[in-house]
Image 1 (tube, rainbow, N blue to C red):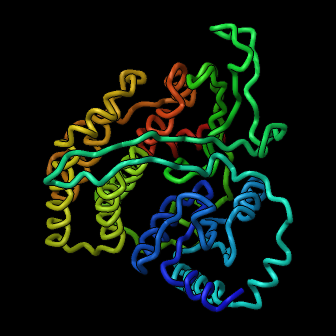
Image 2 (tube, one colour; image 1 turned 90 degrees about the horizontal axis):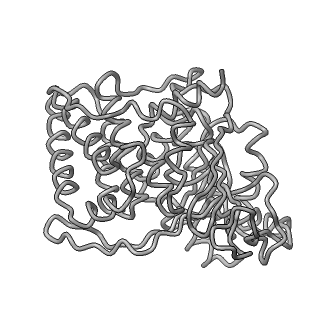
Length: 379
């Protein structure tokens, strides 16, 4: 392990987060701290220098986390965090670990010789150029939304990728027409713990089943070590900005998603200073206007068949407008947040959709609804 390689690794560090269910607030705090250091959130294991597990990891996630860890190239570092107070110290350990040549050599010697194909569910590919306020042209490109099937994956195909097979319901009689895959439970910009099992007929979803892998007993507020956090309307606005940023990222609009995440991070660190909240609200309104004016975003989201009469673009704008209104202490415009009521609602919405639209539909579900569904499934 050369010193030059070590220095390069600890420059602008790419951190891959694995969020354990029940740790959304902690995850947002960690993301804010990573951004504050000028580091980058990795989208896939191959892009990462470090793996950071957010929350106490139960046994159900150990195999998945190990599979992801084995895909990260050396030099690499792995750690976990369960409390907000430990964020700074945990992040400080990452560059030190990456630069520890003896540790990196030991790690390299202990790595398995043969590593399976990177979990498909960790892939997030989306083309596109930034949509600036002056220029609304954006090439969304082809979005490849892979799946992760860590439970009973068919490893018989090339590089461990399951081959398509025939099915009695093949609509065109072709033998190579049915593929089984899963999305989740650990994906960037994806609800932690949610697993969507799909049967694909070509690129169209024919059958869907859904479930949650549950995390530890750590609550959303990290009950054992409650962090200082925005309360009431500010907390609601923070969560809405988080949801909007992830939806924009899934849509391939990363530059604007970054603006929304900066607002979210500022709210997480913010005091009750009304003047500061007012300026944040103005900035959020400005970004919301940019999103509303985008012809390309309108086109890309309008191309998704409306699931259960839910308009993904309207949801995105509703979140942004509601967040700005909450910060400005103005009446919150009405926006539909009642869907989905059950996992069955999501399942029906996904049937008949193309695979590339599934992540956008899931990203269009408000975080509070996901949390409620997880609690219902626990009951």
